[in-house]
Length: 144
Length: 407
Image 1 (tube, rainbow over the protein chains, first blue to last red):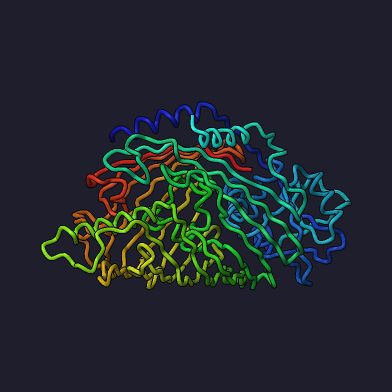
Image 2: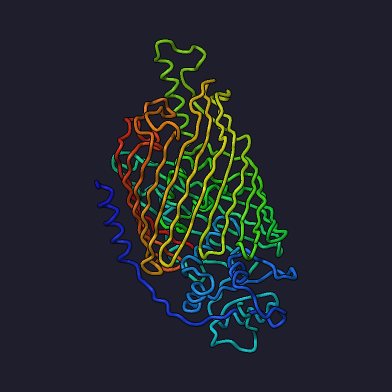
């Protein structure tokens, strides 16, 4: 194996000894849109394409304003249940878009409250929140 | 300590102390500022790889900053500057990595003009940002790091779009045309100059030297006459499956001491790609052939396709910890897998490269990534004589660790 492997393993041990880890819990999430949005439902494929930046306009041609909820629990469930990706895979997908020059990734919000405030104030916005935190400011969008 | 080293370390420290919420400047949907810093260590035994790596080197870093402005819902302008150091090259000079104006007419049709990344294979457009992939080095058979500057980005434009058909899936396409501007201080430039002078020295020392050839040249340049190509990525209605095909062609003219001395033509460079993730497993595989013709002083020094392919399997033990294993194979000449002549004119008894790689990646959080990998290689293809003036060994190893911060 030679000299490199020993040095590499030693440096890895040092790097990882400084690292920490996190644990994500699960919860139920729903898509929400502005009350002025006439849609009541959306196909799962269309939802996936919106959050992957492939579909940028509603059917009438309005630009879709996307909000990604960075609350760890909500984000993890959204990634796994709707995008069928791990949280890291979706994070890297958005970074890939940014750092390769392919586009600007969606805005990131810290929690349900920020997503609801953004969607309520932005006519053509879409976001995802915990089902428990749904209130009258935003409209749920059913995934068909 | 040299000033350049101080600069690098200072920038890295700056990134460390930036408070995370303030590090990224997503002012709103219209203005976004992001960046990354990475520092690695590269070591090898048997041969020098990309640098004087036999001694081990920390001259292995990248710093990038990008700014995007959305001028309207359809128009965006943006750019990324990059400073990198790989051994004695790059030297942390700041260069434009990409810079473009992007107008998206519809989801199925858009246009980017400026300095645009070349979409060869699935991962060429992201090769400067190592935190985007499982291992530190992209598989070298397809993404040869010694020729990074020849396939990184072009000045020109690309038509792109996403065509969706609900029952079938969707297609991402790109059609591009432009020219590559080669840097005069790249490893490829210097190794080309070295190879040409070795050939000229061989001529001088031969029994019947060609009197029309100079004894040596002091400088060489390479102009790209054109580059064009296309890529198509198909995402079928199967979760996390992508199938891709990309193709490109280019023509370069070589100059030695300002006189034309040869041509390099990529007649056809195609890559077939597969990416699939299932639960905690991810599979990446690509196969490519680059059919190229090179002439030097009216002699055809190479004509034919190479052959390159790899398979990489990644297992995510947790959301933040993953392990990868890679098998990567390259043949200089698809039709002649025996002895061959290196670009320098030197005989190479092992014109292949069979690389087993093992990597680990740990994402500390969404900003920090730690990676390490080790490779054992059979064959000396793709190695530069430039770094190995006393010859190469058939069996050799290399390994690297890298810490990356991005915001």
